[in-house]
Length: 196
Image (cartoon, rainbow, N blue to C red; front, side, top):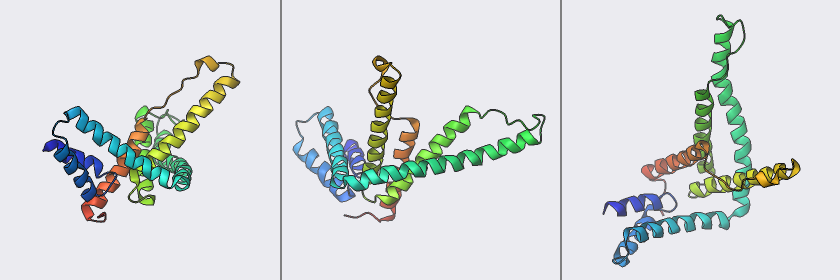
């Protein structure tokens, strides 16, 4: 029963709670001979199918949202770094550093990436209600595609085409983006704003 509740929770991130419950109920009812691996593979395939359907249904909107999120992320990164760097500048001005700003600690850079990623996720979720994770996936797909394309172009241009790495991964900022969208969706579910 615990895995059914977990599966419902996962599916409720991409569809209504009622539909998630119905999908899991049908799976539990029909899946008597299905093992644990088969159960979770079905949940994974269903989740991916719903997300992909949301992206494919309105590709132009999702690509446009990904482009807009890029500019929002740049603006937010600038403001967040500024908020962190002003205290460092004041510290340098009034201490023995003689006005030289000390190097930015790594924890500041990591904090900015996580804060910005989380806020971008919330921003995306507000603009794609009911398709929050699809919007995040669209952003990740667009930025990954562009990143790989620029990497290959640079490698070819610099004459090191054999060193080009084809692949994508989730950065901590991407994970924070998905967490922000999930947090926003869960808050809508708790408030009862998502029904059908």
